[in-house]
Picture 1 (cartoon, rainbow, N blue to C red):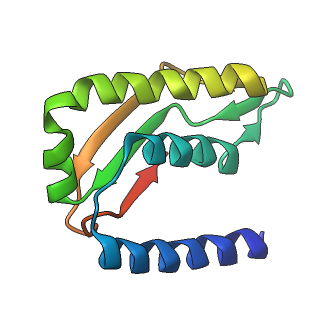
Picture 2 (picture 1 turned 60 degrees about the vertical axis):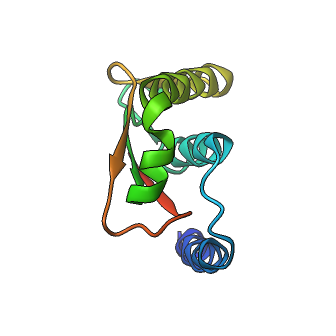
Length: 118
């Protein structure tokens, strides 16, 4: 558990550095990778022994990045939700309800950085 926390802190530090250096924006594939990792990191076992994962995700983006995705936001949200369902099928995970992904503007995020909250 402590190792996971350390890895996350290191990851945020490195991502923040690169986001400031390159400011190239975020690619949808990065969102998908992080969404899958969020599912894996937050899985649990229910009373029936099934592996349950979060089914609602908020993708927090900087305003500039959200503007880049504005025209395709709804289709990107659908694609990310489908990627989550596909990953769940592959891993044998179950959801406790329908899967939803929402892109949101967050003042806490810098351009090129994002966070997924499950």
